[in-house]
Length: 233
Image (cartoon, rainbow, N blue to C red):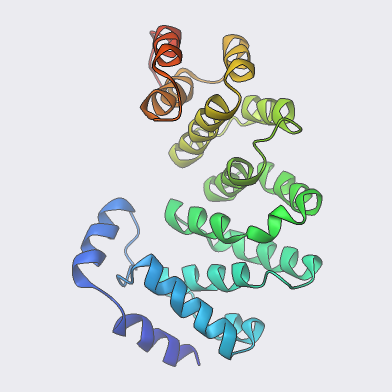
């Protein structure tokens, strides 16, 4: 099965896309070049035709798309027992070694909407990690599923507690704050006024919010004036 899947991934690969996507994932040298929508359709097909748990066991970890495919299969298991899914997530996250696999995996975990409390507990574990993409996984899960009034103050505390200086963690935090500004502008502005997060993350969050079409021009002007002068990482 593993060999068959690998051959299929090469069959659906696109050389131009491989070069383009590799440029978006610096340091990732094992990209075959399968486009995400095509890969997702293949995952759905595998899930429908095979036992997804056995399939995951048989997929190698050699190529980017193989790891991506494993995550997509976990995301397809929406009707599975949540404790089973949590175990698969916990085993999968350490395999994540770039932002794209992380973000696609998080987006596919729609089961989170049904099991907010259970997933929240797992997220806390990865927030305590010292590994860049394990922390990014936790932050992206928060921005995908938990930016709600109920969680807002807790999320602000998490932003303050994340001290990781790795680029993809800082980018995730800035992205999450920008979503908070879009959804809860006044509360988030108040948070930022007292925030102790580093200047780079702070300014990047404001930049992302200003670039959003979901924030009015008058609010964007206020945000521009909130930027910190010392833009040092």
